[in-house]
Image (cartoon, rainbow, N blue to C red; front, side):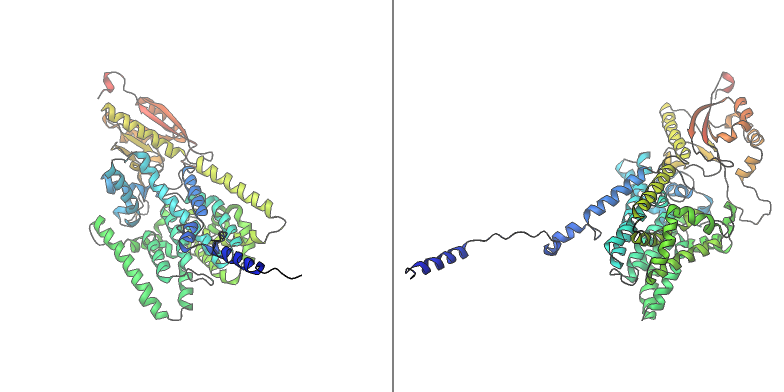
Length: 541
């Protein structure tokens, strides 16, 4: 058949008309087709998915509010109490500050927060307690995310997730990461510094950034340099331009941070003081930390490290055999830190906290290689750690905080009534926080326990003298009724021993607070508040 003339021309005209129409293309949702602005918006502030960042921050904020117990005195006496004294000009500074063993760099962070609250007229006691802890929680969340990002660079997302899981469910991290301890800040700075450390495969290495963070950690707590000694030595050994590394990076960073520390301490001490040297001299060279207790050399290996790792321990050991050789430096760092601290007589769980995130790397490798037993292992790991975290965070040793909340309310009520009141804490020294948790110039006193710096062989501090014969000490100390405190705070184990004094001076128990299920020595299971009741004209002031 012949094609009719004009059919072809009509066909091509149709094609031309269609080509002039606007064709709508399907939008691609892959990240490969995102603009740089859209990609940055999705990835969040820390280079990670915004939802992961928000989840981590929200978790650490919940973590903060689910820790309502006390751990060690330093979380208040070396941070919040000093900050309160700096801003409000009343409070108590421990002997470390009179001897200049501590620097003002770390308390200055919280003092800045207190000053802002004060200028805004919102310096309520609850904000003074929780704002510093929320700030610490935020910093810990950043450290968690940096650990995840590092592992994703070094390995892959799957291993990074298991390391992240181990980090988030660690009971000891949960217990410590929102406390205002120098050890907590030391750990945060160590993890973030590791993100910039030149590990094989890292894409974020930056010598100036990581050395600056290490220097800041050293300024805050001089022992922070201990875990970094093998890491710094490795970096120096592998560097092609060793002299440039020292002259153009390490020395300038060290000079700037040390100068900053010297200037801050010069302002608050009133004269030039190198507190880092004083700290190391007291704790390492003179080993005077034994005044606060000593342990056998193997304590970290036999008790401290297993307790801190908890149920992560078998996964850590398993992961040590699985991890690639490039992570050997992290294992060396952990062992080195344990060995160095083992040589010091005074030992505490918190001292080895900074190397705990290093251990999570090996735990993550272990979980990644599990096949049949992965789900049971995850369940045991999560449940055991969360139960321990919630118990230690909400139950164990909470009385010393609850009792100060009660004292704060008493101080506020007494201020309204315009009547004089005073408090005497008759417990092992520094058992409770002080003015940072009361925020009222209520006269308060506690049993002193400074160490002997003169070399006396038979030295006893005030607390030791008191506990030798509490009843005799009280009668001697308060022979005049006019000097008797309004409130006495004691552990229940002391009640029977001083009952004669309490009765003769008209003290009545007005409040009881649970403290711990594991009383030990001078520490009881409950805390009692005794109030002096004035009866008749004889006791009127």
